[in-house]
Image 1 (cartoon, rainbow, N blue to C red):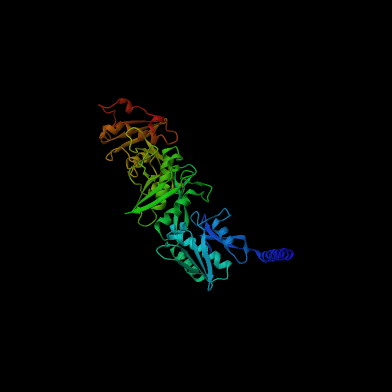
Image 2 (image 1 turned 60 degrees about the vertical axis):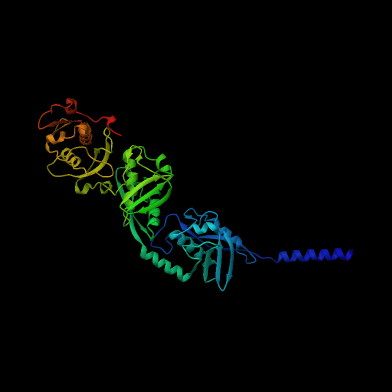
Length: 439
């Protein structure tokens, strides 16, 4: 019996000694992840390293891999991997690390797949004494391939390719008064159109580098889907695009145009339509957007006072027979012509675009424009009366637009020097802007 007890004690001691022989080593290395805000002109413009410590027990890298795929700790980085991506199995043979990843990884494609594979390869090529990394998902393909294999030389090749694909675009933010769009240059290194659009929209949602500008896309909005067909880009946003939208029509217009003017820079994209949660938008608040939007040059600022431009607001229709919508407009000051007349001329010539149009008949001739004691007197030709159904809205548009001039208190319109018969005479009295004229 004593012998048996002694043998058991010896066995216990041997097991304890074997356990003690397991070696735990704490190592450190660079874990590569995707930048939230890419930078350019540097070696790692899209991906960047994060120095991390990790335990290695008897050369088992399982904990290190679990820590890596869990995601970054730095605020400026994000995981390029779909949620629940993890390592199913791994092995090293002939200086090649083979990784078999979980199924969510196979959902990646295009640039997203390229960035994710680049992050993995850069991480393990720098940490381990290997020459190549092979990535696969069991029973799945990656961009139509059974596996993707990368070496350090492949990474250099990919960087050269990105360098060749770099294109400069303008990100159109709003000025602080929400009147005009101001463009800031950014460099994009994606080849796929949808990837470029996602990057540009993400940039529009971010805080601009200039404190004089502000983003226009409502807070909390997410881009759910992008599709492109025959020059028309359809953007599907989350519900916050509507629920958190700006209150004023003019600000909502800038939201749409900041997106449209930005992404129509991509060759082949001419129009944009908007959806929320898969439903096509035909109204954005009081803004009529039943037709796709196109880029609008006149929405771009700033007002160039150096070449004698002045800032005004033209009041036109946006599909309503009752209400006016304001369009910030830059007008070039012409010697010898007062601002009131320049505004009126610009209003009559207003080019219909994105659902905004003037109801003033284009054949209308300006006979005279004079101002006396804060009242602007406007005499027009009889063609102004051609559309009786929209006459009142036309008069309101003129009055509201002219009253933006400093010192103008009211406007009186006549037709060929007199008040026309057969129309409401109140329309041809001295009128001032009323709040209930506007949407």
